[in-house]
Image 1 (spheres, helix red, strand yellow):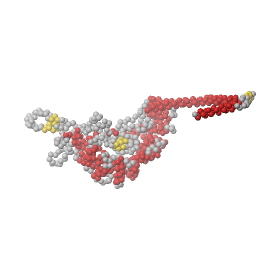
Image 2 (image 1 turned 90 degrees about the horizontal axis):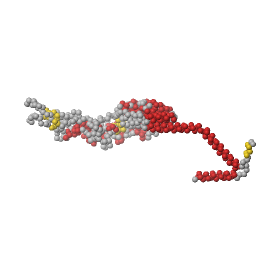
Image 3 (image 1 turned 90 degrees about the vertical axis):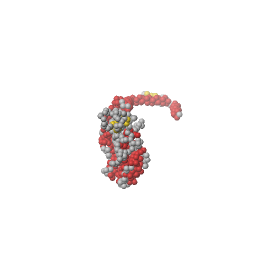
Image 4 (image 1 turned 60 degrees about the horizontal axis):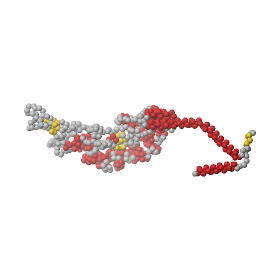
Length: 602
């Protein structure tokens, strides 16, 4: 509406001006040499307006002609740029779905149309990676590292190529150069921190951690936790070399991370040696409430030097009472009870976990049977159950299982990666199938404990030791023995011997023998063997119902697991260059970036 009003106002002003000019009397005389003109004022004004319009039109034509070459060049450049961007877009899409030929073709088109575009260099580098041409990829990343706008991206690409080539020295040098350019670079700080921890450069690692906090890469809570982890690692390394520095480091670590198990254990040890028993117990109790661990229970039991086994048992019971029903408390009580020869207390602590035991539960029960009664048969049966029992928690990080705590994951270099948990390989299957005890195990566990008699006792009962491969002869069944422990009954066929002649049959687990007295008459044909129900020996590894093959042996203490790429980055572990090592191979354990721990020293 406002524009309409302004337009009408302008029309009115123009009309008023034209009317005013038309009302002006007089003529305008123009003389140029012999030329003389004297138009009226309205005619002169009209001619002057037409002349201005003609000049403007002519100037526009001359401007278009003057600017035509530049516009043609600009248009040609825009068309080439559009073609290059089209090639870059489709090339990146081809890399995404693994089309090597299309990626190479689009990369060549992008270099031809837009040679100075950073994305063209990136497409060229990634197409070379996809094709497996490492030298060409390194040349492209070096070209990117020489440019001001793509220097950090080129360094990252060179870092990944150094990782793939197992060149740890070059990788850490590139990462340190990237940190100088950009202290807030996450990948560079992560890499340098991991390498310094691998080389046990704890002071350098603490400096990098402080830089990460200043750059805003981590928050205050994460900084406190990770600093406590690094201080604990330094204290563990200096425990036997410089105890003063180790004590100072671990005390600061406990203040920063009171629930860190290794820090609490080492700090309690130092406090115990300094006769600060109460402070040591408080440290262990704080960590135990957060994460019950056998090392904490052991440190709590020995917090006061010189105590007897019964005093340690009472102290462990006090600690276990803080987390009722937890298996670690029961295992700690059982361990202390066995040391104190309180076998009934050990059985009572392990009773809730005997139905579905873990390996540690089964081994403790075997030790109880062997130590209390000297029953090697039952102990061997419990040991056999431990082979197929569920695995206990262990220090695990990124699929890597270790027998001790470490500050950094040897697979990815991640700080504070180890957690006390059950390894993934030992978790139950989705079907929920379990391995039941064999008849031999049930028979040995259900049989009453053997009786030991001294020399000269009447009718001593021998102690039979069960053997899996070759079972010993079963003792004569008694009235109070359960059915599972009784020997199978034998069925004899009629023979040619006289009824009055005695005949004794001796039945073993897998064969039957007939013993007859020497005949008084001439030799007769041998009687038919006595038939009996054979008892098959229980195999060590039984077929499981869900897999239909022998159950595997327990996993070793340390299993390296193949690492999946944790950072998408610049074609990190591209589709045409996958790392799929088998578990247990030397490269999976100590090769490449996944095994830099072994080269720098744990």
